[in-house]
Image 1 (tube, rainbow, N blue to C red):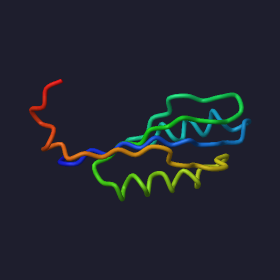
Image 2: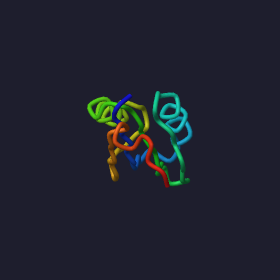
Image 3: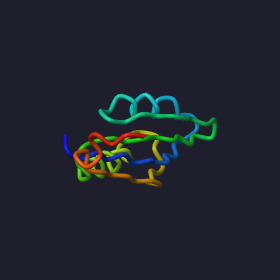
Length: 88
């Protein structure tokens, strides 16, 4: 892996389907749900090596039953080779 990509995504789901949407999202590779509100808002991250794969993954959220919208709100990518050996 030479590139690291992470995106923050806000997913809005039907309130009565929010738990099923969370399960479907967490089942996808590189996807993690960090918060789920009673109103159906979910805070999600997507991580992968390829920017195109991340974009395809986010687009696929709309195919999940109960998802009303999904919007990327943050994106970060970096070349891991440039950060290897970096010290904090």
